[in-house]
Length: 577
Image (cartoon, rainbow, N blue to C red):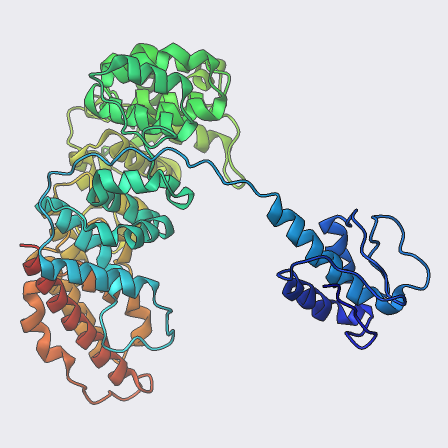
């Protein structure tokens, strides 16, 4: 039956647009034909475009009256414009619904590959659900209290689960992939744990596209045993897929990866060549030298510099020999004085040969040209050349020699970079010096970042022992970066030195929040067996004179949280056993 609107249906005006739009939406479900009385505007068979109706609703029917036929609104129709708008919307909705055709169903996706790994124990499955649920919970902010931070335990849980070879529960894969999407540090362990079913799910959800490593369809990355599939993906894949493919092939067969890269090298973009060249760090050997020598003539300065850096990490390469000749012409034993010392004559120019071998001619702001060039030469020269240059002296003896004309800082810093690049533990020990020596007076560099890199070249136990002695001598204020390169869980002496230093800081009335970073590291890195021994530290002690107000309570909470976290980690490990 026709329906007649009256002038009392709704008001007009731009300020009523939201109400009008809401009414229009409510009227969209009405069916049947619509008409108006003699004083109303009649909706014709040629409806206004949906976009025009929306515009009228947003602007207000007094400013933009709806036009039934799509043209200008007829004169005198403003009074019934809201009713006309709703009628036009209802008719338009009916026409759209009547014209819909059933969609053709798509093909079902192929099932995920089988996963032969054993399922998680029930307790471990409940623990994972708890960890992932806590990750999604809003942060309360402010004081942390004594409750362990479950979010920070997810990486450790995943690492242990993968070590034990368990399969991820299907019901927990969506929150696990969401967590990996939000935190890139979780992705390697999370994707390993998710297995083929996780990859299958990622192919169905664009938000999990990061998990696709083989191809845009989500198929597994081909191995080196299928050269045709490798070649096809290398030539047709997306950039991220090609980088991941090259890394995988390089890890399995360095020669095959180099041959694959050579097939398209000349046609790649400069920024892509740089990323591909970086993949050669894995398994770098003398077999890569001819390719890297050609890259020294690349059009891109960054590519040339990276190629030179890789060649300088090969002590027997031709570039290393050229750099050794240049460096030893600048750094020599000083025979003018009575005792042994080092004389330095920095280069006076940066010729084309030096530039081709990766020496950057223009120094950064605040650096002199000659010291800049000298540092690059000494950094790229094989460290073994200095033993010959200084009469067979050891690295420790060479580093201890006085250097003329205040060149010691520049020369020692270059030797530090060379030791890291060439992974030379002997030179790293010499440049680190005794851990009890203050960094500012050390033989190498005062930079804690550089010292951290030097420590990485040492065996794990030796590294932990050096850092433990450093903390015992200097406290925790300068040890945060050094702790970050120590293996987890911290060995006994290192863990005890950290806890003792925290206890000493509390007794001294130190501001507790300045040690929150180290305390967080301790929660994740201390051996869980230390929990019972640390129980005594959880008591609230009397605050010493001059201490920060309330510091005693905060320290007690921090130690309680540390003990609780260690016990939780022990329980997690038992659940995965």
